[in-house]
Image 1 (cartoon, one colour):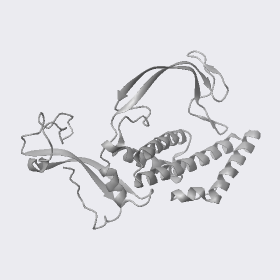
Image 2 (image 1 turned 30 degrees about the horizontal axis):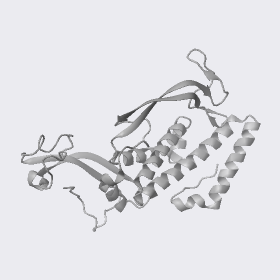
Image 3 (image 1 turned 90 degrees about the vertical axis):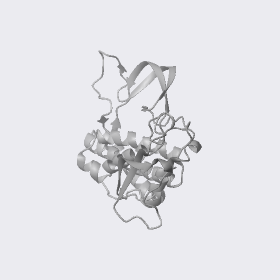
Image 4 (image 1 turned 90 degrees about the horizontal axis):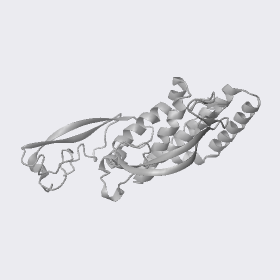
Length: 271
């Protein structure tokens, strides 16, 4: 397999990337015809790793451009693609294809999004079939294929049939992260914007630490009694920390591999 590194969104359109993907698809088809499962699986991994890198770079650029909802959905796509690759690859491949790196950064980026309420639909499924052999899946009558595993460069998934919608719930930890209930214009994306004002490349090293920081109560004079308490307890300010001398609020500490530019403040106080 060839080795190259995507670094920016524009590179996705380069002819050598398109040519390489076409070559991989042809190599995979030939491997399937020749019953060469190892080569077919290796081609699948290479194509999926490119797709993951491209999707991640696009998400990073969208966050830079403050297209937060689009980026959020792309980060979820990265999470799904990376999980499939990880279940069918060696640790060495995950390292050199940047799957491990992207997986970690996606988690960190998701953690600093202000989204916290999601719609979770519930469905009933009549039956499922195996994508590899078409077998109808039953509790005591399954085929030999394992869901999520590779077979000659094809991922085994279960196709669902006779789906009926039952209900929808509001949850904080959804299966489908794309089902965000919030309107972006009502949310505070200052933490993401701060990060993006410093990080230039999607593959730049950085880390995050979650702590609390104590401030004098006088610094919260702009917070009305009926507003949510700044300590993030979920209660109103009047029922929680109003009247205290000091208030501890959640604090995000970023760790960068290079000095922060002088014009960027070390600390942003949100009140």
